[in-house]
Image 1 (tube, helix red, strand yellow):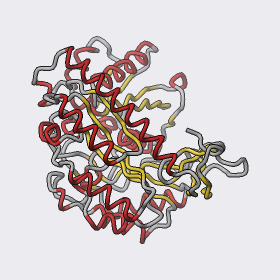
Image 2 (image 1 turned 135 degrees about the vertical axis):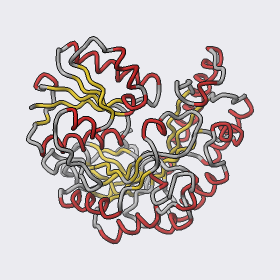
Image 3 (image 1 turned 90 degrees about the horizontal axis):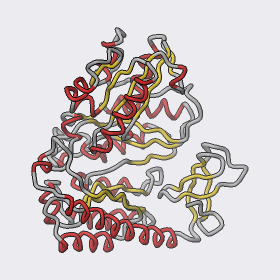
Image 4 (image 1 turned 120 degrees about the vertical axis):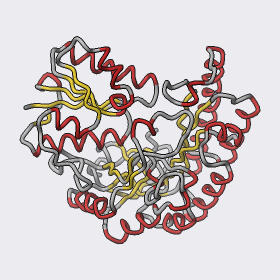
Length: 408
């Protein structure tokens, strides 16, 4: 059987698709790169926003029009299985299967997935960067977030399984791993509401001691989980000097309304601690504008904190109610939607200016660059540079930042 997987959403979804692919390949089936060559299609859906749900539905409809059997898995399938079943109830070629284990059962394939399953194949082609899952789920109750419902309770992957996968990546010639999870900084906590129990520093120390992988990058981090021990390790040059914070707002009042579990003092301390040991660190953040109850004062407070920290990169999203979340029960009209979008543009403009300032501050400095395409590569602090013709894909070389090398 030939199968095609369409993955929507985050790195964790991509890892889940890798696990599905590995299980099917071990069972003798073949993954194909084009739906035209497939016997079945697996849509790994996303539901983080209403737009993500729409794109998932678009993919399902597209493949059903090609008269292919479609199996829907992923977050949208877990959150709204009844909605999907009702929408496509007259199509016998459509099936909602929820997670990867349910998918394998629906395909009458033995479940070979466990904590030690490597979600990729060493024979799947040239790679420079690989996402590796260290954690899944979340117990936090952020009022805007559907992911907690879609992904279930916090669970830390075992240290032995993580080390095993990193060593396999190293053996396959992969130069950079990206530690990924739904709430990855909560690794080692009994649940993700106990940030003081985070053992992320312990995990990083073990990776540094037990593997030789050249570069270790971290995905989005909750500010409340980064303990002083983390910054002692952050001085190690194998750790990429790029920290992406799941911030959402720079206003204390808005953070409390969101039930984020952290304030702004933690963010200031992170910036100070990170820059003390890695002066050229790039700090990035996710920001939501126009959340329920955010007035102009709160918006300006948020803008002020972002400018104070001088973030190197911002990912900005105007708030829109997500059905199934507590915040969706509060009134939210078209007028406030327009305000949220206008504020998002203001924050994006600030982010663009801070990005240029950060890059200019790196001019004349030398960084290790991982070549990705033969023409460009990324510094450890996430600046894209042009690479010389003799630098092979997957190779790391020190290059300086300047007008002649900047690829952004």
